[in-house]
Image (cartoon, rainbow, N blue to C red; front, side):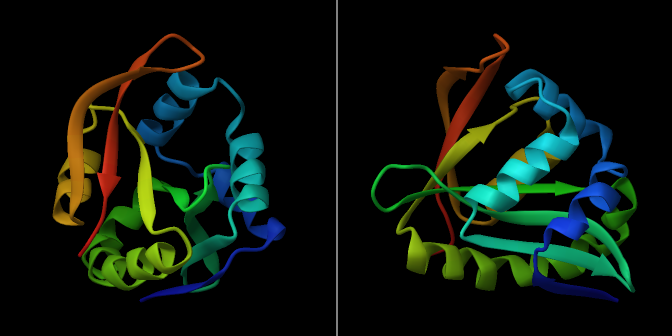
Length: 151
């Protein structure tokens, strides 16, 4: 059984040490910073940020970054590989958290790695529009833009 609560900085190290390879690849391709730094920035810059627990163990962190553009938030999620066993639970909870994000940030958008088909599938399921609009990351890799969210 998973539980979700507001994130705390003490969640960073346990989650950073367990992040799944797909997320580490996106971090390397996106900004090149260590996972612990990315999680620290994510928690610091996300007015909405939650940690997913399996029992007492944190297995993922997700939230919505303040983009610095009025009404625009950037949803994100980093998790451990073993949290895949909780996919059904997490997916069933996603709509309520996306709606909370949209109350604070009416426009949600971000970048995705088109090679990570599970992420693309989830974004589509969650009502996001998947575009072919490219964005070149600081590390020189091409990601694509998504926007919208459950209506």
